[in-house]
Amino acid sequence: MTAKMKAAIFVEPGRIVLDEKPIPDVGPQDALIRITTTTICGTDVHILKGEYPVARGLTIGHEPVGIIEKLGSGVTGFQEGQRVIAGAITPSGHSFACLCGCSSQDGPGTRHGFKAMGGWKFGNTIDGTQAEYVLVPDALVNLSPVPDHLTDEQVLMCPDIMSTGFSGAESGGVRIGDTVVVFALGPIGLCAVAGAKLMGATTIIGVDTVPKRIEIARALGATHVVDFKTHDPVEEIMRLTDGRGADVSIEALGTQKTFEAALRVLRPGGTLSSLGVYSSDLTIPLGAFSAGLGDNRIVTTLCPGGKDRMRRLMEVVASGRVDLKPLVTHQFKLDDIEAAYDLFAHQRDGVLKVAIKP
Image 1 (tube, helix red, strand yellow):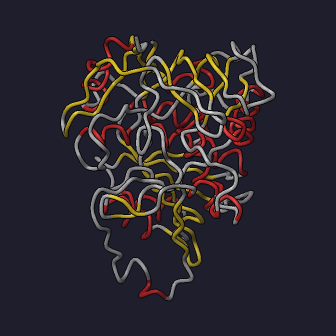
Image 2 (cartoon, helix red, strand yellow; image 1 turned 30 degrees about the horizontal axis):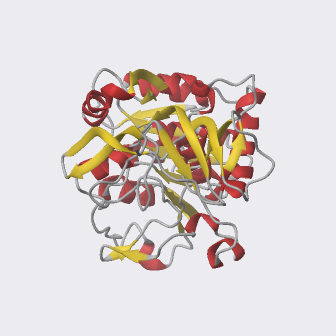
């Protein structure tokens, strides 16, 4: 009789339900992980709403912390019973994308009529992590041991939110003494604030209106916060920078309005670093783009994955230089994941991230 596990399954737009699925078989290069903590991402809400297409029957989720239950015959250097994380992005290590230095794009290419999101496989092209077990492909490239002195909650942001937010600052080329603006202080935007500070930015301006997010942003390094409900963000940012504009603007929401504002606040030659997941076409306004003559850069980044990226992020957490525990505002059992989705999707009760515990 096939052993079963509980899993959060995409049924149709508007419905993700908890149901049973077979526990996956383990191939030679795989590892079966018993999930101890996972979470819900904003991208999962895009899936729930039907704004990002995935196959019906897919297990959702891409942020795993857990214990190795079973190792494939070709996986060495790890032990069953060892606590590990894997990134949301799981590169193979030997694809064209990996070998040309862009492992985050190691994915299936075009599907569902559009270019799929690179190397994002969990909860996108293969079963994900909102379950009792998840099968990690190419385990040697993707598993990273969790130090004993770090809790699940301390490393829960590493697989996606922390890696993505930090990459916004890294891809934007933030330098010592820079002015950086972060549009939207959700979990990714908050991690972008922390990343910009680590990279050397000395003026970090966040844009949001939620008091709890503003409080955490200041704790993570924001020197100013603009409330978009009381001030025009572009005008206020230009005032705060004495008309100079930002060296780097980081768009962390995924809307036309925030993308355009991030473009308008750039100094000549500044960089817009885009992290948002967009659900419709973007338009680049002629004036904001200086008719293409402003020496500006627009860069996009997909969450860097792989074992060394995870190791580096856990080193940052262990050093005490960044504390992301306040981002985990709620905890749910896996049995209650439908209620967790309802809370998270509607952004009630000051939710930032939820910890899901099978």
